Length: 196
Ligand code: AP5
Ligand code: MG
Image 1 (tube, rainbow, N blue to C red):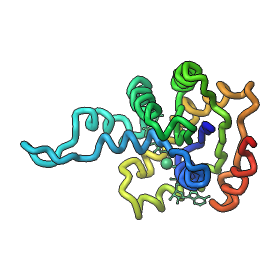
Image 2: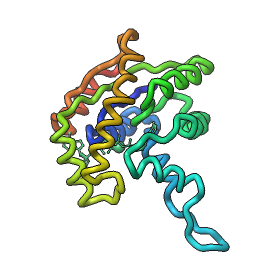
Image 3: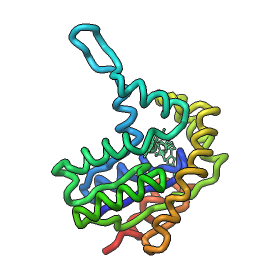
């Protein structure tokens, strides 16, 4: 089973994917996490800890709340989908995030005779999302959880990611989930949407 989670920053994509990945025993693929991973310093024998050239390029996009380029995201995704644990299905957290990514994902999946089975659209009130992310900023170290960058991420969601829903609209596979409910209630509603 292949399930896409779409929702604005802070809607709970990561929280719900973690639970559902355990429940279905399929991998949770977060492009945000994969991109953040490229920014992490790695031990380098000659010069000590360093961030790769790719990591520096990625930081230029994600730390400011802008989307990373489609070609780069697709390179990470196609490499990950080739792994043995992805053959039976996976959860896409925050991917595809542009219509172009959705078209490229369709091409990739159809070559393998795979398909997207469900799109979960997490719907949330913006003021509440800003509150959640500012609260998270006090606990976790995400550079993009500042008030200014949260606003930029929300704008990008509306202009570039919300149109991805139109891409899937005529397939009858989109289910909207109220992301203002508790994580437990959201999860129960997600389980109820799963194809049998
Ligand atoms: P990404 O990592 O995907 O971040 P995001 O979409 O901005 O969303 P978040 O991870 O902040 O929120 P979430 O929906 O996962 O919510 P969470 O469960 O954490 O992307 C980061 C950046 O990477 C992008 O801005 C872009 O630059 C780049 N990027 C990523 N994918 C890309 C792509 N495909 N193409 C190009 N660029 C890409 O919950 C948030 C908080 O709320 C937590 O503290 C949580 O505990 C709390 N919470 C969760 N659920 C609830 C609830 N029901 N009630 C109350 N609190 C809750
Ligand atoms: Mg997340």
